[in-house]
Image (tube, rainbow, N blue to C red; front, side):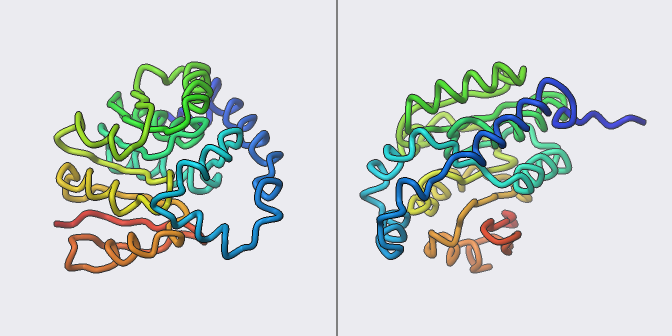
Length: 222
């Protein structure tokens, strides 16, 4: 029996290779090289300055790592995900991984939210080029509002990759919709100590552990 893997075939495979190569050529350090490390950390963890921070980063892809993208695809495939929510679309690299899994699972719905309108347009174009746009609903605006309503009754998989300080608040919006066994992947979660404290406390209904150097992988168990 041949297993379908949309990630490994055109048009997705060459598109992702190009998008990752373009992202590799970008330099966030060019924006923050003159800013003290403590100030960068403060901005990443701020619940009030994230709008300004991400406006400054609007021309950068800021993608998940390649192995994180592969992890997202594998989790969605093995969990037979049909409903996925993503916080932080950016240029759509992670979105393509997730939507490819939905395609190979036979279909589904991916809701993703992005604050920057220019990034939304880039993501739409990339999803169209990947042939996956029909599976994805992009909501433009602050996810505290865009993900506050209109969610599926049961969510199979979540990716958190927007403003790190908002991870606890976004999880709270989604929590009642998470099915038992739902996976939550939080990129750069070390910038959100409050989020890590929440998912690592078994009393809150999660099993959680770090994956690689900058990802927290959690499973909803209650």
